[in-house]
Image 1 (tube, rainbow, N blue to C red):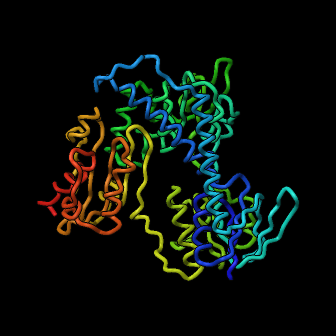
Image 2 (cartoon, one colour):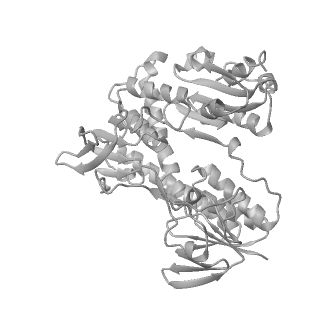
Image 3 (spheres, rainbow, N blue to C red):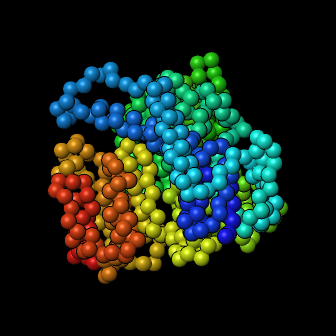
Length: 456
């Protein structure tokens, strides 16, 4: 029986452990901070739980359009919200641990160091242990990047892992960074009722996302009272008597009660012994892997944010599954980033799959595009939804769906039809011919596909 040792208990690690166990391996999983890793305990699960409360308040704020009168004083009790966030995160961690235990995975609470491709030393509360193993998977994740000129204190200057200690809603939250994390938290605190200033070093929010989608989000942000400062780079953040002061590189300052730093992530690869055993890292410290999650050292695999391939929990999980399938001789489908679906949990959400608008414009392929505003959808009218759209990309002459974008409420759910289409190389006619419920938001997906019929 093969023995696999997994370092890191996030999605890349625990999904790999479950696959390895099903394939007959003996599995040991080492995690120092809690089963589920940062994804479950401090990042994805907590942030989306916070966003769920924010989304509810956003819906309530527009209830008047649907003929419902609500008191103007409705607001979130942040202490209760954050307590729920942490409670649900721990419950999810416990559920994952239960699944692992039921699959006979040995879980060790400790800090691992890789000594060779066949041995891992683990420091635990009761001493050091040496694990002899046939293969190793590194899935140690990443942590928030901070700046020497903006040091988090956990009270007023915060990383996204520290916000759940707040007991009261910030009077004025300054969010530095307009990528996915920054935009999500800016949207969340705006929905919760805080004044929000979003400091973006680029000319628009979400510079890595579809331009049409980002423009919708920025328009919604400003309509809801958020201050968006484009082309504004942070120089420093300091505490003041009243809160915080953010100084920009052009000398301007912004005063607020709190500052949330969303400056990107740093891989958790230092101190693991990776370089000592020959595992190649890039200049930023990410582990270099191929499409089946192999590192440069035979018998050592890596998955998740520590690889920097695409920092999504779903990708981490897939990398972990692929690694174990490759190691243990099961059928392997190498990671295909052209079929990945992802979501930005702003309000409204942005969901994407496959080719992006930028890739379409830079490609030599002939691509046709259909874009349909959600405002024309009957269900959207009923629910008071005014912002959002469905966009589909397909190969000209063939009609094969190669990508899509959905902006709207629960876009993360609507994108699944397009994700299946991209994954299975369906044509726009096949998407259009599938029945959709009337009225439904999904009807706009079929209608957008229908509009490509005469072209494709």
